[in-house]
Length: 375
Image 1 (spheres, rainbow, N blue to C red):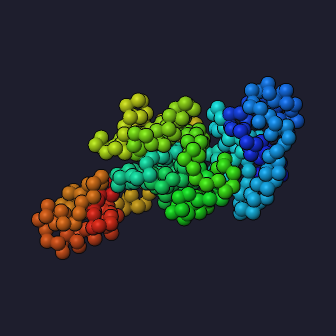
Image 2: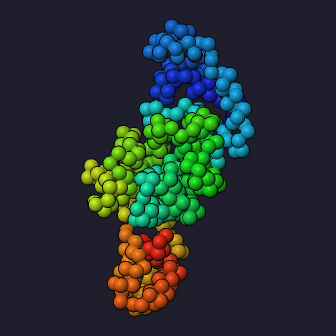
Image 3: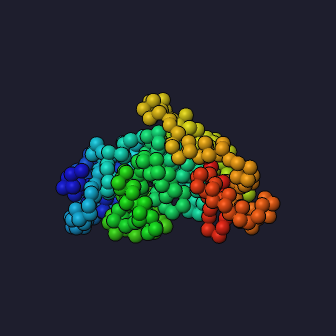
């Protein structure tokens, strides 16, 4: 990533009014940012640019800001810039109608052109959604796919965590400047993704989260990977926007079916009704990928943790089996209800649940709530 070579690209991206579509138009017309800045007002006007934008380009008003921005990029460890001509720029993004002119990148830029899939969904997942996002992230990453998300709280971050649990690779796409972590509670995840992949953004440094930034970010989440997996999302969720963009870009769209009585099941269930592939595990996704991609993936191997869990589930004694079969993966049950329904005394129930937790097949949530772990 040659920073000095990016100055004119940066100036073009920072010119007020030059959105991605306008930038694509003038770059196609004049061949390069230098060509754009050398163009006459008449030639620029022929591209149907607004008069203020033409004036800003002719006067090269953005170069001072670009120099300052470049100095800021140099101060951030491992940060660089990628433009359309860089081989590390995600080639899949060049296929969409408004690719970012410039990407800020931290981490390993080589992952940007590896086969990838996005996992997206609600910021307030159910226990079932949490388990499915983590499971899919883990299974897909274990096969060698890079997991992409918008780094939001909820399903996005959980999918990434699943990938990292499998020692896989991940790409976070920010709706802020690359120097900001939003939401703040994802700071540790941000650092882990940097270690195992890359963080990217098209927004200038110090850009704070704003509602209008996230639909812009979503087109990268939709356009860069081979497909998008929607785990949970309400009727007007960003995951629906992302999945519809993915369809426009010719990407695969997958939906994890959800409980029809849950509002967060609306998005995936609607997408499935409209023709998205219904998925319950990583293999359901992989079998839809292009043959060359499938052939290049690492052989499916069951993670050791899952092997242990399956063996543990097959070797339960009477009270363990009774409690395990009573619990649900979707709806946690309170300890008092477990005692009442099981007919066992509270000491025996607590001891048995503790054993099941140690086997990794039962999870305790805050408030003495227990649920089955999806295997």
